[in-house]
Length: 233
Figure 1 (cartoon, rainbow, N blue to C red):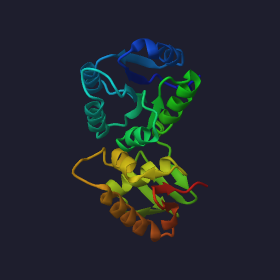
Figure 2: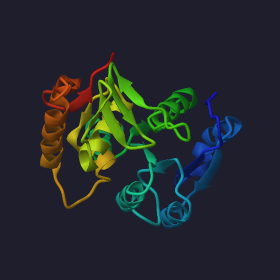
Figure 3: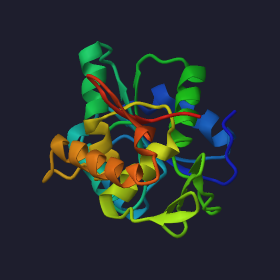
């Protein structure tokens, strides 16, 4: 069963509701508020009216192309976190990579195991920053306080602002996980089409320069051929 300390909203967008009905029922049993919609246009309206914590979208739905719906989700992400999982009949590696590179947090192929789908949903929802308690993200004596947006090292403040702050917060929230540049653009810059992947590299360099003052520049590792990660304890 999924752990949910408070009710969260999940939107399922699928052309065939019958195929996802067992998943919807299981999520409801776990304490989530689940809305299932068969039409992309109606889904876009629902997202704009009340952004859910998670959107699970069928790659081949009617009414509004999946790519357009992805754009709507990315627009909402500018204001608040919205996780996205793609459901698809397409199981080739190229299709999965394409979906993830477009900003999805996970990609589930049909037909899917209900237990596996639940586990993946649970994992994606855990990526969200803690709500309400504003617990500091820490590594040794490096701390980021999400309530005050302040970063300290050895108890002394570091001048981490703007994109560098959002980048550090995101990476510290997922220690050990590798993110490619496209994923970081989607998460940190909300998929802004006016910037490119080079922006990620530039901001990583700036952030490392700031972290180098107290000796924490090595916390952000480059994974050759893929992207970046914040080291684990």
